Every structure is written in C-alpha cells, then in structure tokens.
Length: 252
Image 1 (cartoon, rainbow, N blue to C red):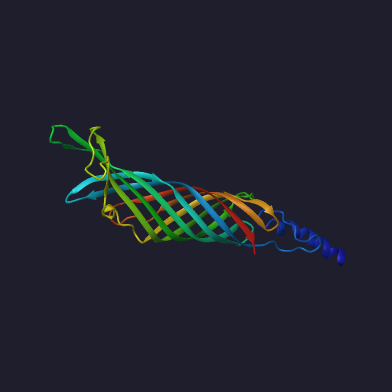
Image 2 (cartoon, rainbow, N blue to C red):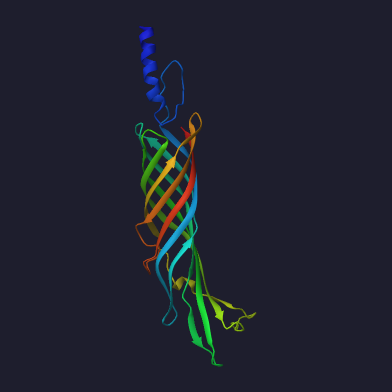
C-alpha cells in the first residue's frame, strides 16, 4: 500500500508542479500544490499618441492643435490568482502619468513696416492619475507566454500645462517682454483643454514569465491601452498608450 501511494504521488507531481508553467519542486516525497496567488510590483513606459483637435481661443478661435506624442509612465503594485493551469485573474493599483507636446500651424499678421509676423503656438501638458486595472491572463500553448485582456480606470490626480507663442519670422522681431524674447508665455493655458476627472481604457497585451527562483518570477510585458473616454471634455482628445514594462511577482 505504501508503494502504491508513493507511485500515485509521483504520477501527480508533474501536473501539480506545472500549474504556473514552472517546474518548482516543493517536495520530493509528497505532492504539494504549487502557489496560485502572487503579489508584486510593475513598471512600464513607452509612447503615447494623442489624437483629436484642441482649440485655443482668445476673443475668437485663434489656432488649433491636432495630434501629438508624449511619454507615459506606470508604477504599480499588483496581484494575480491562477484559476487553473492556464488562466489567471490579475489586478493592480498604481500611478500613471502622461505628457503631450502640441504645436499649432503657423499664423501670419501684418507689421507696421509692411512685413509679416509669423508665429505658432506650443502647448505642453503633463497629467497624473491614480489608476486601478485588472483582467484575465491566458497562457499560450502551455508555454511561459501569455496574453492579457482587461480594463483600466483612472482618477485625475493633477495636471499642469504651458501655452507659448513662438516667433518664426522675421529674424529680427522680438516680443516686448522683459527681456525681449521670441517666446511669449500665455497665462490662460487651461483655456485650451480642461482634463476630465475620470478616464477609462481597454487593455490588451502579452507577457513572458521567467522563473527567478522557487516562487518568484519576472514578466517582460507589452501593453496597448485603447481609450474608451476622452482626455478632455472640450474636444475629442484621446490618448493611446503603447508601453513596454516588467513585473516582478512573488508567491504568497
């Protein structure tokens, strides 16, 4: 009977050891279920593409900003729980920031000496959020690779923006600032776009788990965040993220 129980245990051990895709051996005599719950930290950055048209108005509409790129950053703490050998639910809480550098088309105005003053506007914005995201992770073909799907909800934490008018010509023209300059800061930068307090995005991505030691692994990840809501209520401004990151996970 003892021999039979030992053989049954040996037969069960390979499946139990592969529950997360790693051959973590917890006992050579008794089958021990591998961990299914993990916690860890994650960081990601990449490229944000802003689409939509932003309008700056003084007394009348002055100029438009169309499209931009910036840098996103995600710092978070996360957890995942494996439902079976192939599927896991995951979630994380974190800080997300994005930047955007917008530039308008050139505008021309006549000067008293008959020449034309040519300028453009530059709108630079930085936005910070507190975010909660989660979804489902599916292993591919019993390998260490997986695909993930989920949702992200973000609450606005802070935002800042600068709006400047820049002289493109003539070369000898300067604004009457102190000291004279080819760049003039516009005080009311918020008139370009008020940032929405809540932002939602659909997440899709992939990762590859690499075992570090028994119970711990890292996952290089690639993620696309597709906007479901607008960044600003004043325009159809949407921000698409493409990020590369890494997660470090530890079994509980």
